Amino acid sequence: MDKFIEVINLTYSYRPGNGNEVKALNGINMKVFKGEFLAVTGQNGSGKSTLARHFNGLLKPRSGNVLVGGFSILDKNRLAEIRKMIGMVFQNPDNQLVSSIVEEDVAFGPENLGLPPETIRSRVGWALETLNIENLRRESPNNLSEGQKQLVAIAGVLAMKPECIVLDEPTTHLDPRSRRELLEIIIRLNREEGITIILLTHFMKEVVFCDRMIVMDLGEIKISGTPHEVFEKTTEIVRLGLDFPVATQLAAGLRGKGLKLPGNIITTEELIAQLCLLK
Image (tube, rainbow, N blue to C red; front, side, top):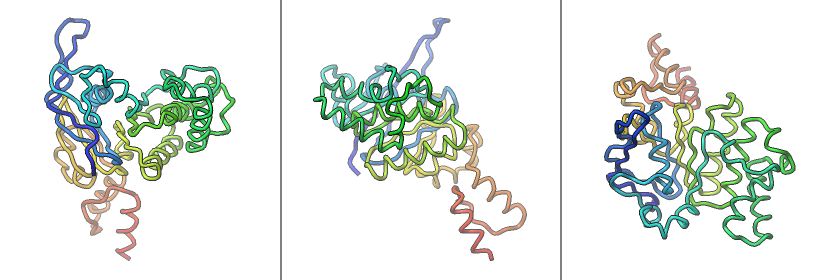
């Protein structure tokens, strides 16, 4: 796959109210490839949100650099172009909803790109239809559920047609059903629309569907690999205070009761398939 984002020895520090310097990122090196689904996980304070905010230049590094499509986020002349390539969806959708009508909100981004009215209308319709919320077109965001608000926020980013969408803990405030539905839509955007997805999450159930994942702790990348590779590092996962996918936990419990199941099960489908083989 072609390289899309390259993070080079990235370091970032900030000073909280007490004035002491806190190093949030410490020498991060990583790559994101076009069309992949990358999950970034870690406990609160691990640095994953700080890292994501460097991808489109919302934050500037203390040292190091980030290249997006070959362009540096340190080049002010390229920031507008970089931000067209990378769309950000934040944890709280209310922070991104700016209009009193859904379709106007979704049109806000394309309008700022200076697109012709007919193109804007086409993109708004496409984004709403893609996310299955065309029926909300004339609704007020204030009347929507948290899950619907999050979909509208994603639609606003999608209508700008970025090459990559970064989602920062998008399911945190959702109920299990809404969380599952939103994840299905994110997967579809990646697999059917070819959009590069970077998902920041602490829900292990969500990362099992990604192509690759990285685990962060104290501003550093501690583990990187496919979900199967990462969850094989049992000792390290426990040390970092992370959970295992539900299917992995169930399989471990069943092995403890004498069932001969492999140790690399991470999805419900894999668990069911292995249980069927035992018959």
